Amino acid sequence: MTAPSPRPAAFLDRDGTLNVDVDYAHRPEQITWIDGAAAALRRLNEAGWWVFVVTNQSGIARGLFDEAAVDRLHDWMVTDLARQGARIDAFYYCPHHPRGTVPAYTKVCDCRKPAPGLLLRAMAEHPVDVARSFMLGDRMRDVEAGRAAGVASHLYEGGNVDAVVERLMAGS
Image 1 (tube, helix red, strand yellow):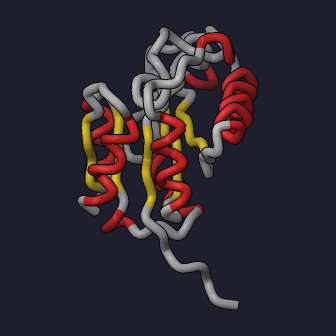
Image 2 (cartoon, rainbow, N blue to C red):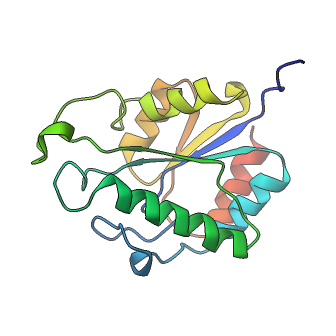
């Protein structure tokens, strides 16, 4: 049996890139999709790209919610996006923060963006064509994480996410 061929990947920040950023979103009622988010994911899915969400979730370290809440929200997102014909292949999140209040999560780590750990983990778990992949996020820490992982990285500055993703795919 041969290993699957590498595919390009879209590494996407969650809050502020796919959904409107509200402080510490962890419940479905806090999610409003940014214009074009589901269409962008469908476009990537139909083209055979991996779709990975890479997100800092310091609310866990701060004691505002637990990992189970993040998992429930991500499960809801998968279901809601499936109704729209879109798929996310995997979610990777960092629960840490150096100034957290929950001791188990209060630390400096290699997965909190701008560190590249979330992207590197996705690449280790999936056959990714790094040269054709990209990172898209609304903060410079997202761009820095992508660059540190060796992926073309772009700052999302608003507008229709699908139009942005279409441009990025064409440039790959």
